[in-house]
Length: 83
Image (cartoon, rainbow, N blue to C red):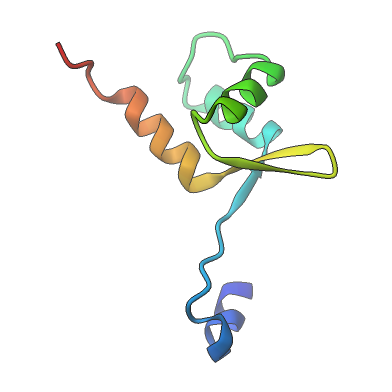
């Protein structure tokens, strides 16, 4: 609904909103889709974000990950390694 409201306003046409996920949501995604046998610790996920494995932001000490960045990282994990 919010995106529909923004689309009706001409000054937001060129503005792309990126969905952010809390680290707990990232953990749930990794658990639900069994990406890893054991889910990495939150501190490890934060380190990976800071190292640039996926993009994110920190707001008032809380870490968030951009949903599209997490998705592209997961796709890269699923690709076979080049020999």
